[in-house]
Length: 308
Image (cartoon, rainbow, N blue to C red; front, top):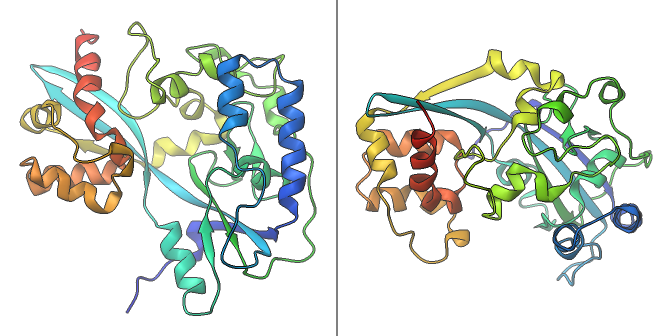
């Protein structure tokens, strides 16, 4: 018997595939009016899929789906010092849930993460924009996993294309603008200034040594947002002993291409390094992306060296 999924763990819209052209217009309009640096233009414009790719079936819909993520605080110990990091962990599988709905019914699902996901989510009414450029769900806030699939599943009728605006509460708040460590969230600009965003600088390996380093990308704007206040009451602590921390800080070679490492073979990779099962289970619980495994030693070293 296959795994059972709770529909309450997911939010979904199935829109006409023709709406991709609407999203393209909105996306290009933002890009044309924004004062982008060359690096921002490359990231915002060059990496997006704005037209339908060639597919072995006739697409009729785009499935926009989000899943709730849980929050985990990791505690690492070394030489009498303690450092902590906040992780957004995936508890449920979007792929698994969609397969439970459509497998064996003759439908096709092609996961395409480079579609303008946030525009599609907001304009379809699935989510709302925050000033930090993240998508919010009314109950879950911005701690969500958002995915898009091109499909031939019949689309919903009666949907309305909505305007792109920030949540009303953002207009009088300003918490994320005040606390963003890089000053990436600006009052005079709708889109983030990417080259100041510590999360983006971290992923692109441009984060200055003087900036705070964490294993998980920076989420100062998310953890301090009033719309996300509920995470503290649902936060789980995952504690690593000194011995486990030392194992994590040992430099290991990641086999093959790191970005091709999957969650499926991530645990096997850690076992090949000699990680005991309890340590493997803790790392998997944090939802650490497989391709960031090799970055853990350097990031923990930085965190400990900048802690009194």
